[in-house]
Length: 229
Image 1: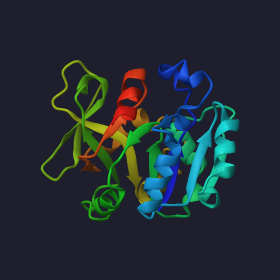
Image 2 (image 1 turned 180 degrees about the vertical axis):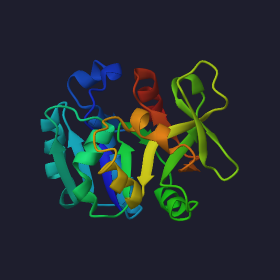
Image 3 (image 1 turned 60 degrees about the vertical axis):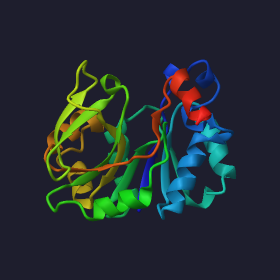
Image 4 (image 1 turned 90 degrees about the vertical axis):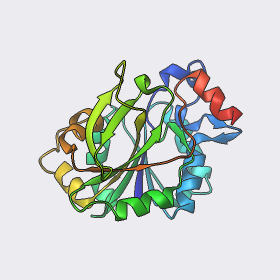
């Protein structure tokens, strides 16, 4: 399973830490966040990896060049940010006609990725993708999903005051080859995966809930929490 790790963001909410280091390389107990992702995904049999860069791209390139996973890494620098869907679409040949794993690599996640892959393989036949979900203590800050009895998404509630539940979209997606083909065709001009793609797939998104630690380390408070675990 080939994977796209989205790592080009500015990490503005983590300033001043991210004034000098890209968010994807901030250390969690001394280990760069991106290295944690690569370690856990490699252990689950995922790879090779495509990583997009933009902000402080030279630091990500330096990390990749000396990484123990260097032979599995391909970097693509975006001089102008393409957006989550834009990056995926621009790099569709990387996936070689197969399914794809797409991850927002600025989160801290200890999920069982073998279980996630197995859930995707066993998804209902009509579903084009599988989304990882997690339970959040702050649902008003997340994208909350509603599911049917099969675990298929039937509704989204994006950062609303009183969402119906606390099951959140983890922004980790397994995408079928069929969906990738559609992205390269009828949706070739979209840029944002969350707002321009997901809404059109309601009823066709399977979900897998992880009970493991999942944190958006976008604030100093949650970053400190990840380091304190």
